[in-house]
Structures are given as C-alpha cells and as structure tokens.
Amino acid sequence: MRKQFLFIFSALIVAYTSQAQTRTTRIGYIDMEYILENVSDYKEAKAQLELKAQKWKQDIEAKKLDINKLKEGLKAERALLTKELIDERETEIKFLEDEMLTYQEKQFGANGNLIHQKASLAKPIQDQVFTAVQDIAEAKNYDFIFDKSSDLTMLFSNKRFDISDQVIRVLNRTDKREQLTKKQLKDQEAKEKIENAIDENPAMQDRQKVLDEKRAAREKLIEDRRLEQEAKKKEYDDRRKAIAAEREAKKNGMVSEPAKTEAAKTATDATAKPATTTGTEPTTTAPAVDKAAERQKLYEERKKELEERRKKILEEREAAKKAKEAETQKSNTTNN
Image (cartoon, rainbow, N blue to C red):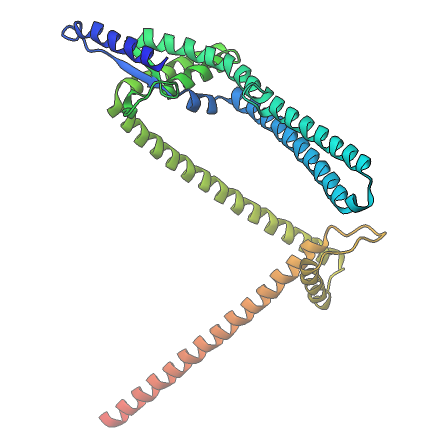
C-alpha cells in the first residue's frame, strides 16, 4: 500500500514539474492527530470514552482478583479435597480465566469496542477536516496537501508548510457562526481576513505576535490598576464605616476607653480562634467598634507625639533666644 502511494506521489510530482516554469507548486500538510486533539467536541467525546475504558479495566482487574482468590483457596485446601473436587474447582477456574480473556479481547482487542468507538468518534471530525482542507486548497491554490500522521513517511517537514492551525480555525469558525449575530458575524469576517493575511505572510505573523504580546501586557497593566483602585475604594469604605460606627457609639454613650481596649483584645482573640455558635445573635457593630478603638488609640498616640515635638521645638527656640540675648549683652559690655 505504501509503495503504491509513493508511486502515485512521484507520478504527480513529475506531472507538475512541467508546470514549474510557469508557476510555483504549492505544497502543504496537516497533522490529523494534532487537529483532533484541539477540537473541543472530539476532546469531550474522547474523555467520555476514556472513562468507559477505565471502567472496562476495573472489571478485568476484579475478575483477575476473583480468579486469584480461587487459586489460593484451592492451593490451601488441595490436601483435604478429593480428586473429583479438585478437578471441579480447576475446571471452574479455567472457565473464569477464559471468560476474562474473552472479555478483555472484546473490549481492547484489535477489533474490540475501544478501537471501533475511537474510529466512529473520529470519523465525523475527519470528514469536517477533509472539507476544510479542500476549501483551503481551493482558496489558496494549493497543489498538494498531505497528512503527516498517515502512512506517508515524511523525513522532513518545514513548519511553515503546516496548515493544521488554519484547519482548526476553519472548524471553530463553523461552530461559532451558528451562534453569532449579524454584527458579530461581520466582526468575525474581518478577523478572518487578518488571520488569512497572516497565514500568507510569515513576517506579518511575527509582527502580529509582537502586537499581541504588547496588547496582553497593556491589558494586564489596566487590570492591575483596576484591582488597585478597587482595593483603595474598599479600604476607604471600611474606614468610613468605622468612623460612622465610632460616632454612633459615642453618641449613644455605650463605649468607654477601657471598653474599647477590651473590645480590641476580644477582636484579636476572635481572629486567632473561630467563635463558637450560641443561641444569641452576634452583634454586627463589634468589628466596627474595635476598629474605631484602634483608630482612637492611634490618634491619641499621634497627638501625644506631636505635643512632645512641639514642646521640644519651643524649648530649642527659647534656648536659642537666650543664647542670642547673652551674646548681645556680652557684645555690648565689650564695646563699653
């Protein structure tokens, strides 16, 4: 079969050699296995088939365990059994072994269920791939398109002749078109034109890759800034709520300074150890009051620090003033 294919391939190359002077022969190839692995419908169906195959393997392992138990039991009791009982058990074991091998061949054999279901699973996708390849070949004037995963032996293949990604895009476009509105369909067609131009020009593909990387970096920067703004807004809202809760508590005269300190200590313990549920409803203002107590404490410390700094500055000014007066008095005395 392979020799016949190579002969036909060679004959086609020779036939097109005479046309090489008038136009360039365009050759491409696809990788069917790569395409199938990147089609969502095939991947989902393949995952379900793998689960089914896993269930078959578990059934086979269970049968093996049962057979091994019977063998071990016969080995342990052989000295106590008559020849008729021994023959009967050996016959039973042989029957179960044959049954297990038959089941294994049925599921995983050369003509087993796994092979048949894989083939039936890939057949619809392969038909779509063949249609897409024909459309691409007609649209872009390809003379030959081969399948890298077939019986054809490709000793070397340049990546720029691989149109597998183009085929995948065509398949995905077909699925998406059924769900798009007119405006979305128009945008999709414009995007397809750009992708086709990139396929035809490798240099444009490199430039497009650089543009995509820059766009991704810009979008990431915008997202980081948005998250930062949201964090600042949340912090501001928490602070505003805490201040409002503090004012409400002071207005009602319910929180004193010792109570605030005790509330802050309770909040610290609560973060380290989860609170147990009781019959009473938890107060929703406790966290806000605790935060207000902490803010009040920081405010008092800051006020005290500023007061000490102000006193120090006044003392330094007073000392400088006295030193200047003493120097002036000394100067006047010397002049007299």
